[in-house]
Length: 321
Image (cartoon, rainbow, N blue to C red; front, side):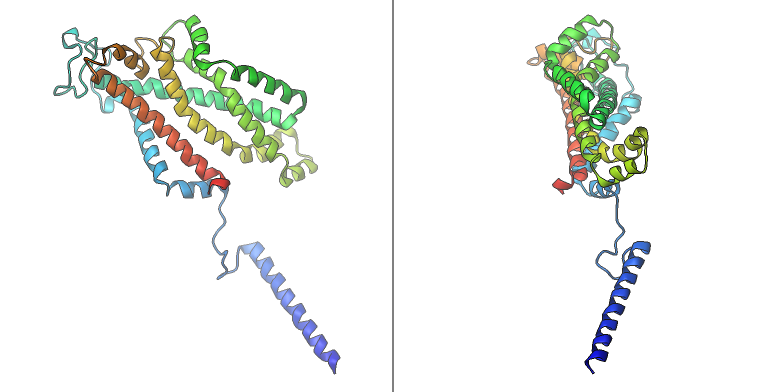
């Protein structure tokens, strides 16, 4: 008599196990079972980050400001119809008047027009320098983190050398030798001193990513180095680089203005906020409007990019959620 009951219980348990296994199989095939707590569709890191960014007011405000700044940098004539290089000495240091809401500078140029056109040089330098530093730093740091050995040691010592160069002193030495009003010497200098920071971030991200199981599985299946780096490691190591590069963009814009202020960055006839701030610094008591508007535009731009970088960092870093 006990044996049938035991067989019945065992049969029931086996059927429950089979039912559970069947449910798990259906879950693996078609997603979570209807009505379960995990019925929502799983999101990737990037879709999850975008989901959080859209609901972050800091990101929304900073992104709108940056879109506006980029728009006027590409098409400044949309909101400024004047010529930033057309000046009238008879109006030098005059205050605001109809048609000229920001007044005039020491040369009689319209401050509003120069402030609008100054966004082009500053944002171009920031974007190009960030792109160059991110690409160079990511490639060198990624190779050092993947291969290690003497290549890793050489890159680390080389990065230490560049970290030891003061930025302002390096700019004075490097840019004072280069003549001309082009933005590219400034971009090259910023890339030269900016890549070590991103290289260290990329190296750390690659060292962490290559220890994951999916990378080891790909290696066991015979994947080459190029495929390992481009298909398996890079997509999972690029997030920290994007965060650092976004924050660094605002810093590079401020660095360009600083170099232009001390006379070794951008030079006339290039229109730059740093140049206008430098020209207005000695006349701040008599004509504060000459300094207020370009300095305010510079501060707003740098703040917008730093806020954007902070929002992106919070969205991509799981530890900060």
